Image (tube, rainbow, N blue to C red; front, side, top):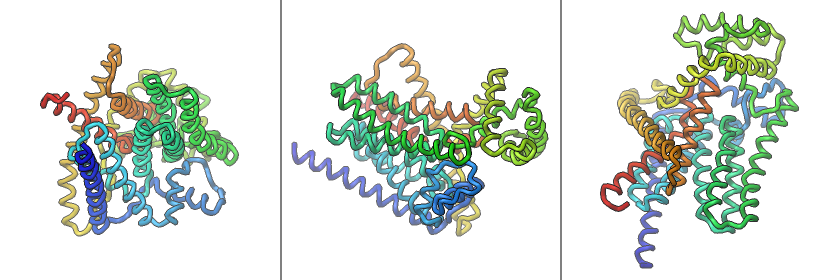
Length: 445
């Protein structure tokens, strides 16, 4: 028995090492044919990184939160250093997915396939070379799940350390993408549910909650207070009103007279945007400078006014809002890729990867559809009061669904891009479901 256990442990270790080596070689090859890419959102992150470095916040408007700018700061502003850090994070995600899969399957080979599947996912790989927050967000989301599992499996002495780490990660995640603030209450509910099933002491439970809540609250509330002091806006970002206008802009002509100035400006820009693309989304990012000049409002104050206008329109016209949210939610699952193919060299690489991505995207969209079918089954089981023996699977399903719905409610724009941090969890849920079906066919479950 001891020999078997030792051999199994060695096999797992070798698989983790091999997965890490594959990740390094894959990214080394990627570095030879591509380069870091700056996108339209990148300058905003770079500006805040510079302000954090110099502690001169002249011109700061509260639009960006500091999670990703801190990574830029740590990289000294070097795009290649950012790419290196994000590449290491990508390798770390593969290793964490291996461990999460192994915890359920106890199969080294199957878990290796899970880790390798992530490593070969092109749209996530290309984000590692992008000066955007998605790669960091993905790492923090997967790390949070890994920490929860480690906390569950650890003894009383080690559990508190993982819970403390989870609190820091959840706080940093919210500072990286403000929507990820929702992770904190979701994880707390999961902990409370798990504690109902265990005999943990009350003191340990209170200590665990405190270990998660305190560091997360310090980071989140601290940045909110900083924004309050600098731009007069308590919150993680002043972009809320602009994001909501991505929905309300579709029927902004119904806005009351008190919003007449910003309504009329938006309608002019919306007409131009529709003539160009057929879509009204993203109009606000063209219209807001003129809105600020016409109203005399600051960036944050205009955001607050846009928030009040949008919420009022949603309440007055719930069906129009619901239709817009539904479209945004559908676009969440389209599995996009953000890359600049003509930066690939030699030219043959662009052609090869174009074919690979065509196949991968079909596969990813299929995985997303299968995930939604699996999720529907879980929701039905919840509705009829069925008990679950796989609480983590249910938690992951609810976590991804909550992210998709909240993102759709808050914004209608690049929703497919904002889904990418949760793509590894979608892949993990589908992988575990397929594994269970395979085991059932073999008669092992």
